[in-house]
Image (cartoon, rainbow, N blue to C red; front, side, top):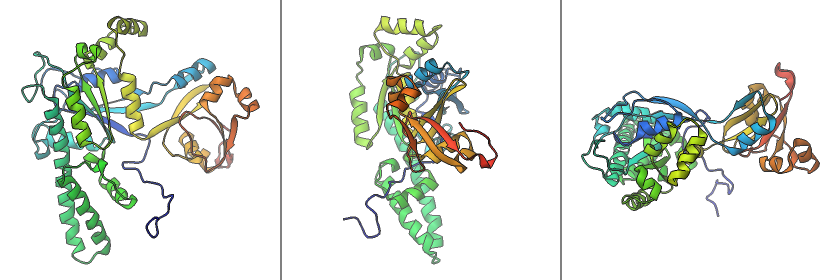
Length: 394
């Protein structure tokens, strides 16, 4: 039986910022392959040199999200304009032990992470005498401890400062601050127990407070294990099992993706897709970039629907759980204000049947109202009242 005043069907709040222009930051120690990873993901040329802090100011770029559904719709409609969904990625300077106390690029590094909504944590699991390691030797388990601890130390310092500040107001009899202090003390205790905020079992009320604070350890993490090209191709590395054990011991839920920044860089230097496919076939490997990008997008709690026709095929990014009127508002605010209905086709139905007319004939073309929750990959045609000044429909 649920607690008094609590409904069985209460929707669990989501930890993190609300929006669709969310960023994922690439984080790790210096010289682990962060900037190379950023370059191959974004097809950029950010500095990637063999010395610590070659990245000082964060580099930002957006990466098209690969999707066979989008490609199919473009091939089908042959539109004048093609607009995929994008993942916003930030390359952040390397963190060192003591960053939470200002060492290395310290506070600048940590403030850059604050601007992100999720983290790609790049871990070095390759040895190369020509690429120095800031800690002297390669030991990814130690490196994981350093990054995890520094983020948690910074959160703990913030929680302690907030507790002191709010306590002064609570002691003066402020009921609202007294309630807030109870929650802040709970967050502080969680961090003191060497736990990440993202792994806590928080109530909706606590999540609301956490979302106003945005602790670093509240951000979801994807672990990218950077292997040598040789180890990646043969799918063997002495550190992988130890890294997996560390993650299992320290994270409630997360994703580990082995990849080779060296292999991905070599592929990026080839002239076209045919050359890349030939090289992958020759070495007996597959690229990890698509998985990295898609996992990053999903980790931000994002998805997209399509509008499709001869003029344009476009993927519109929304947060999971978005209802039809708010999805329409992504196209234009007047679409949300004057929302009448959403005419929806499931992508798989459209692909199988081959046309909108056949979907209608098969009863697969649905008219949905205001309470419809848009599903990833829906193909939607919105009808709206043009009273707000627009004429027509899209």
